[in-house]
Image (tube, each protein chain N blue to C red):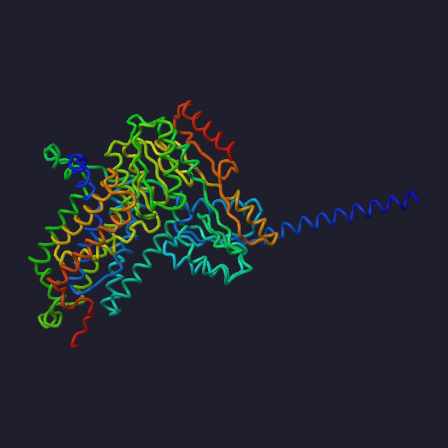
Length: 323
Length: 310
């Protein structure tokens, strides 16, 4: 009797192990099968907006959470992006990400034609009431405030300049947050914002930086992919720079103080889990300090005074505590 | 408002206008040669992009800005030759084939950048050259005599181009090929040879313009020119196919852009109206084009392929 029960126990254990193995293998298979497509306006390695989402998706792939990442970048022309979005949906990708505020109108037309495909649109806070569209945004004003506080603390002239693209989306949030941060620390500071009305004109961004420096700014920041030219000007003029969207230290290790880096993978993973559970959209996601979607990466090569770093860390801590 | 009338602002705006004008000026000058001989090349922007990448990549690998400039020129030369084969020998419809060259340059420059470089890496830029004595002239010195050598060379190319077009046999042949190709042909001028030469000059200058842009900015990025090649083509019409007119157009375009930026920095332009003012350079160009179109005629044989005996 004892022998028989031992045999039964062993059998149950083996069956349980096989079942667990099959179950685990099944999850891996599901992850490996999950396919993401990204359509984005600038280059995948722009050290800014597009790179942030591509890096996030590649991280999820490296972690085995998804199986395939397809990217169509450089679609400054919205009609080109619309073709790519529709094409990916037709090919059966599980999640098609339209990474650009300007793609909203196209997505609103395309998503209803593919009710079984999940779409994500950012940066935006609108899902158009569609059950298969997620929207996502970055609370970039949070990082902007932290950067602004540091900028004000480091500025000797009290004049700080910001080069912006077009006054929309996370760019506007960042610029507004940065200004708030500066004025919070130094209410008398002179913050000048120069929106060049282009996401892609590197030469104009460069001249905007020159103009701000000419007006006395000794600390600059800026957002979007065209700022690479502005960083170059800041470097040649010896003016400090604060980056956002991706780590911009490599552009000018001498003058980049810190960068606010977007970690979209935090919310992408949630979206993917929802899609796997059959929920294809209808929710808004945001990356913040609290969910670790926003991270301040300091330039190790820049000698940032300890008290200034402490100011930044305290601000981050406070924002994390407040959600 | 009084801030705008300070000398510092004036110096900043003029110096910025000159910097912004130079790539446009070089590309437009090159296109002028082609159009004066009867060939329209809408692929200027694509050639500029490939010239920009070639210049950037050469500087990235060697640190030598002049080798970068030369690389842009070589790439421009090759693409100018290719454009000539398409437009002159194959007699393709010039507007469409030019768009093809543009799309090739746009895609190929990005592809090469992705494969050979990846993430934007800063490069050396042209060093500023202070012209002795002249740089010490109050106001004028800061505006005009603290630029890089390529800026001075670009402006020196204006009288040279005017001389070549108006005072040399080659220039006379260019004008004849653009206005009366049949008559010129009967006098023994090889229209094909002239048009090949002007397309190669145009391509080379467009390649140099792209390299100047990339090396001046110290960076390359996808679609770096942001349509500058098309503005250069518009400037050829703006300048009524004359180098001096083109220079004035390029400077006006640069000046309006620089002025708008400066007015934004000084917060004289309200942020709500920022978009409106951003259109100012384009609007002024269109208005000027309307004015020029009423007073000047393009070369009579522009865009018309030449076939002997037809």
